[in-house]
Structures are given as C-alpha cells and as structure tokens.
Image (cartoon, rainbow, N blue to C red; front, side, top):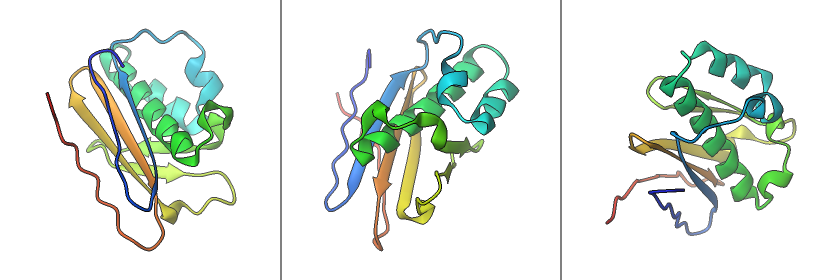
Length: 136
C-alpha cells in the first residue's frame, strides 16, 4: 500500500499478510457486501471518521491475510469469515463451518498511524510468534 510494504516469512506454516492505508476512501456498501452482520454491527458502533475507517481496515486486512494464507485470494467469500477486534488489538476468529479456529493464529498491528497490518498463520501443534520488524 502507499507508504508501506509488508512481507511475511514463515517456515512450515501457511501464512498470509496484508497492509492497508487507513486514510483511503472506502465507497459505501463495501462493508455491507464483504463483511459479516457481526462485523458490520461492530463497524457501525465506531464513531464516524478516523476510528471507523481504522476499524474497517483492521477487519479488511484480517480477512485478506486469511484468504492469502489459504491461497484463494478474493475468490473466497469474505462474509463467511468474521473477526472481533478487542480494544488492545486482540483478535477473535469466527470461521465458517468446518474450519478449526484453533489451527489459526492472527496478529494485528498499527505500524504507523496511517496503516494497519494483519498476519494470518495456519499452524498444527507448534506455537506461533509474530514479530513486527521495522526497516528503512
């Protein structure tokens, strides 16, 4: 995205990463089309303006990181997966039926005021640690 590049490196894991600028304009209807009812309610609970825009991109980057880890991209129906984001950026994953949520690890970051970055990793029995390393 403009002003930031993200790369995920993992050994033995399916991993996806997405980064977006929160100052981008989102056209009306994008959330209604691609987000679950639960996520739309969460989004509308945020005050209009920068807070709502940031929440939109938190949810969007989580969704994109997941479908990238699957290797499916945007062909996967995004409204079948849902995320809850806590005030401390904790992430709860609400997968579609048949997907084991315990096999997934998500991390959400704000590497700058203007950006949100999400990482998704599918794990087996190994614990997953995600670190954000800033570079020039």
